[in-house]
Image 1 (cartoon, one colour):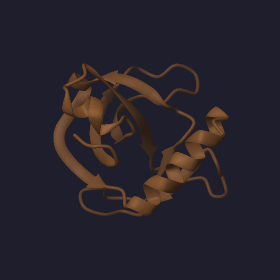
Image 2 (image 1 turned 120 degrees about the horizontal axis):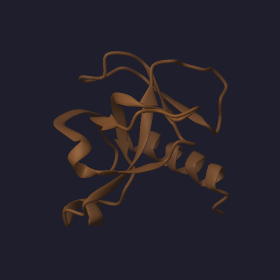
Image 3 (image 1 turned 45 degrees about the vertical axis):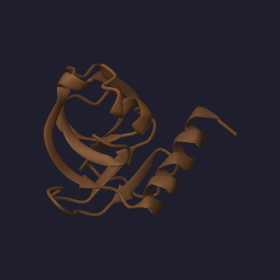
Image 4 (image 1 turned 30 degrees about the vertical axis):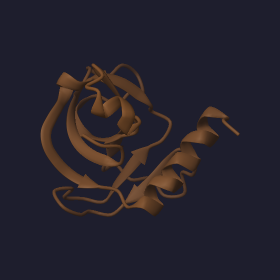
Length: 113
């Protein structure tokens, strides 16, 4: 598992506006932690319920690989989950320029300068 890759993950049952169920997630956590088998991983969930002009809360990625539909990365839904919730099959990887933009949006959401 590497930063910038997308996998399916089992997320907790949703409450209120939280995202739930089996869904694609983007690995946000550093590869340093991924390589030492850290027991949890920091992710951003994806949704196919697209909303235009939702910057900086969402970032649109086009379908590719095993990602069957265009999807929005939910930049305001940062979660840490057990690596046991991640399914083994890689769906796809975001491009480097996309990851840079997603990082910018997460920084805005978190007010990191």
